[in-house]
Amino acid sequence: FFNYFKFLVIFFFTGVILTDFLHLQTVRAQLGDSLSLECSIKPSYQYTLFWFKQTPGEAPQNIAFWSGNFNDDIYYNDKFNQSGRYQVKKSINFFSLSIISLEITDMGTYYCGVVRQRNILFGNGTEICLTNVILADFLHLQTVRAQLGDSLSLECSIKPSYQYTLFWFKQSPGEAPQNIAFWSGNFNDDIHYDDKFNRSERYQVKKSINFFSLSIISLEITDMGTYYCGVVRQRNILFGNGTEICLKSNLDSLRRQGKTPKKKSCREKMEETFEKAVQREIPF
Image (spheres, one colour):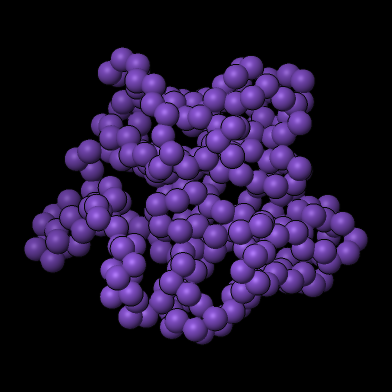
């Protein structure tokens, strides 16, 4: 995958810093600053490139995409196009996103990605964290609580059509979304699995006229995360709101496996600060 992407972070306000990274990176900035995120790409017209933004507790949102044609036209999501502060550019070797005059609403994680041969791949992402800012309003996903060994099913309600591609994604904390499986919009119900999830045989995806469902058999600790149903239509990618799977009484098991996070994320620290402030009745 990393043959396709290398990531660079450029700060307009502190000079230029070029950083290759393999894990989710946090960029700390202040209100009013400007910055640029870049994807290093291989020259090709056989795929679609996109930038996504994901804010805490929400599904990823498409900022803009380049449709793989022979020009550099960029197609924006109306929400991001209206502000004029999000600027995406395509060159031979780079696909960059610039954000001008940062606002509180710009906080979140940004992913560069590619749609190639009907598969969607994400980079690891960059988290933008604004210092001296407390977020008091978080939108929470639906949470499903279960126990190890349980089985469950998630369903997407869809409109009958063969003009789009349907996906199921899994996102573990601090990681980019991973493609579980997709239905390619043909006239049969063939499901194409990512090798990682196909090998386990515990993930079962089914397509019917009105539903696109994901079943997980005999839950394991590694199944914890947020699951999104998605659709690719007219080269645009849309996500559902997502469902978070939380396993009860798993903390000890996670600690034994060394999977508990050692450091709190920028978002977690802000949430904790806000909770303490509310308890002390500190006005904002």
